[in-house]
Amino acid sequence: MESVRRNAEALVEKTMKGNDASHDAAHVWRVRDLALSLAQEEGLSSDPHSMQIVELAALLHDIADYKYLRDPSEEKIVENFLDQEGVEEDKKFKILKIIRGMGFKEEVTGNGSGDWFPEFGVVQDADRLDAIGAIGIARCFTFGGSKKRLLHDPAILPRSDLSKEQYMNKEEQTTINHFHEKLLKLKDMMKTKAGKRRAERRHKFMEEFVKEFYDEWNGLN
Image: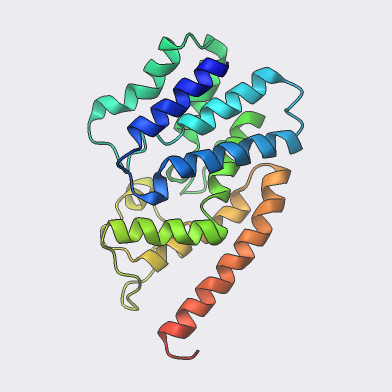
């Protein structure tokens, strides 16, 4: 496992090198650490098999992110890597199921994965924890800046009842609206008890930030 982990880390460094800081290697390291920590709290640490699935899924989860794909062939990078590393079929199946099903776009309509398993829950929750709180705020504005989005435009309202396709098409959106369309919803979408507990503080911090943002925008503070 040690060599597979090192090779996965090297793959992350290589494939995500050109990404902006909202989805860079540092994001992956944070998600990996959070996922392993949540897995311990959820009682998975007694099973090395489960912990390996959690770590590899966390490390590889953003390599074929649709927001950064330059070539359709990149969608196969993770699967090819797992094959090359000789990862057992049952582990590979779970790792790919986590990566392919954990994105917010898969649950944006409220029809999330009802058949999730513990490793799925901790990796998805870890990724969502890194999307909220102080780090989440920093990442949100970093990504918006990289796309040259407006901070805010009172005339552009947050979209509600989004379809998967609408969510993926953010051309007409502002950065602050992303809080309403996604980030402020994540606390109630956490799957594990450990994830739910940690999300509370980060969510509260974000709510306070959004209120302060609007007050300052409107000249109230």
